[in-house]
Image (cartoon, rainbow, N blue to C red):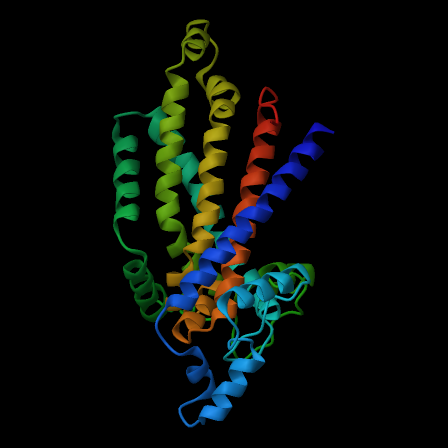
Length: 337
């Protein structure tokens, strides 16, 4: 009962957050220089055609009226229509969001599966060779820009070694498995199509690896710091003095004490990776929200930009709520307030 009330209250608080986010995005997009109607109509369009297009999309109305119409449409499930392609924004989001979600999940899995053990290893062997190696590698990953790593990986893994494709989500000459979730790897597994799964995974591997590097360094460093803090607690020192095996102390006491810190950094990185996938998706021509956002921005297509921003706001809010709920599951002493 307490959890349900807490979730309901948190979900209600998301509404004013999204309204503020939409107002900010709407204001910024409208004050940018440029002529979106002219771009959408084309260089040969007459003034009458431009005015008709502006009326069709409501861009001839005062800005407050445009914003109120947009918000009213949102509450009715209408996320607007692309000025450039004439497609419904919600339909585009249904296509592009699963791609970004799949890429983000893969990157977070890499960062977590590699970063957490590396952080533990670094902390357990503090100031020794394994610790120095892990810290140097983490510094290496966090120091190099993603676009440079992406081009290096494309050149080496894609062109020189020909191990992985360097663009797209799937082989352009083949049909992907029928969409269920929109994530090709998941859809392939649901259909037990392991050949399609392998193709999709090969296309996903390189961009996910590049996207994960910055987060891998962060997860490693935060895990190391959390484990070092746990190892320095008086309770852990007493357990070691009592002769409890060191492996048991690490797995039963230290790991449990660091779960909240690890969960926090993983949740934060999930949100930041999803929002930060723009560069990686653009370089790898990966058709997700990031590439969609870049193309819409270049065309001054306001409705997709608004839709992407609100969707990111929803995802970030849900991640925060889920993380807070997970805190209570990990540590029952944490109460939902």
